[in-house]
Image (tube, rainbow, N blue to C red; front, side, top):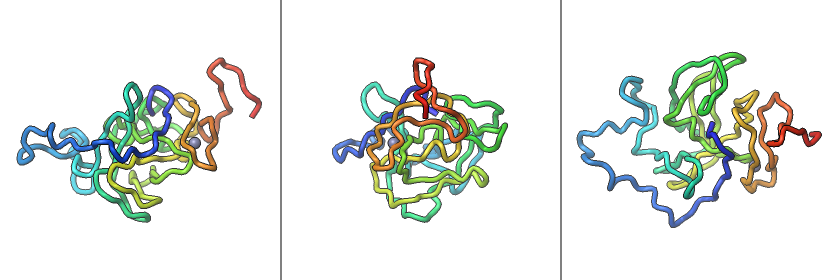
Length: 182
Ligand SMILES: [Zn+2]
């Protein structure tokens, strides 16, 4: 997970998510989001479908769609390295196993009303809502994590927003180390 509080920014219709200009040669490039040594194939995220970009100046990165994704369909498969402790950019697989993915899933933003769901048993990402080009992919961090690398305040704006995001099995830990009693 990102190393600082993620403040979800609603989609900016004027934002330019195109990275075409930065591509030196479309014909020869490898569009995979994951590095070549991962040896992933069909179904894994490519730069044709997603861009990992900064939300705003000075804030963390997010994953943005570059094409529509339909609710109820698999968005992509995911990959990474198995580690045995929570770190930045890890997603929990089981009690003592985590997927370290500093290329794609580790940059998914949090929302309390998310548009994607990570199936950590199958290593697949699914669309829970229709997603439009330019929109951030958002997941609920508590849907996978018992304990977050870092708890943080949420400004996702959803009616169901929990305001302060924790893992699903940990108490609230305020930045000053005191609990607010929840
Ligand atoms: Zn929220």
